[in-house]
Image (cartoon, rainbow, N blue to C red; front, side, top):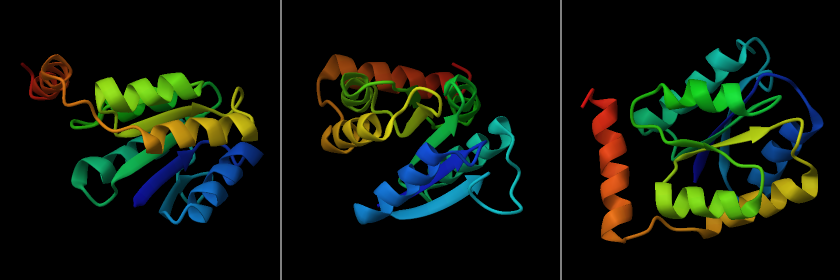
Length: 148
C-alpha cells in the first residue's frame, strides 16, 4: 500500500512511524519535516499528504503534529478525505470500521512507540463496515464535500 506521511516536526515518533510502515511493506511518501526542503508547517504538509489520498496517488495518509488536531483539521479540508485523530487502538479501529477513514491523524506528544504499533495494528486490521447505516453516514459526509 502507498501511504503518505506528514509531520511538522522531525520527532522520534515520526521517524519511527516511517520505519514501521516500511517494515510492514508499505511504500511511504514523506512530507513536511520528514522531507528535506519541504514546507514543515502542519497545515501545508498535512494538506499535501491528504491531497495525494484525494487524487488517488496514495491509498491512505498519516498526518502528524504536536497534538494531532491541526493536522486532522487541515487534512479534513481536502474533499474526499476522512481524517480521524486517534490516540488509541479502539478509536483507530472504529475510525476505519464506522467512518471509513482514509487518513489517520496522530499526536507527536501523546503517541509512544508501543502505542503507535497498537494503533497501526488496529488501523490496518479494520475494514469499512458494510452496514447500511454506516455506509449512509459515510455517503452523507461525501455529500458535504460537494456543498450539500
